[in-house]
Image (cartoon, rainbow, N blue to C red; front, top):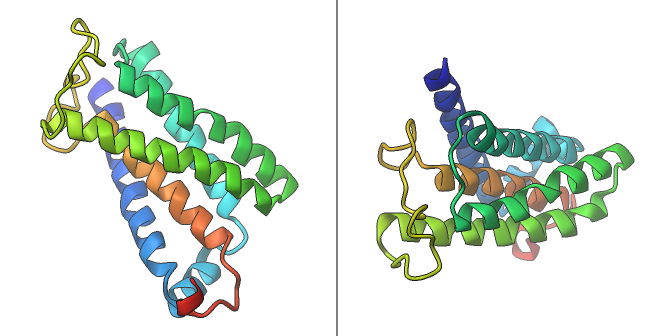
Length: 180
């Protein structure tokens, strides 16, 4: 059962990442924005809230259920992921599109931290002294030891989806691609 849950986390994160990448690309064409508007128009806050809730639940499950000890960079990712549950949830209830400024700031910083964490994990950047020698940032936990199926890649994918949603939610419906 544990392997199934971890696999579902990875698959969910990859679906979010692929969707997020598509959203970002579609944001820069009028027909792309129109397509997204037809599919999810007006519900971006709710999708963002659901993503933040699932991201937070997965993070807590990894540490509290599976007993994975988060490394320093995992904590930094959590610092920028968890508040989006409140920001996007409250905004969705109030239909407050202006809250995307806060949500995009949190997700933008979060994705940069995820990128740094991925760079450490693949060896582009040395762990140096910022990581705990007893709990290094390059630890590959059970279920996340294959290639790119790491916790930090999952966080990156979720942040990317929230960013893609926010870019569409804040787009003016009549914007031309040059104004995007």
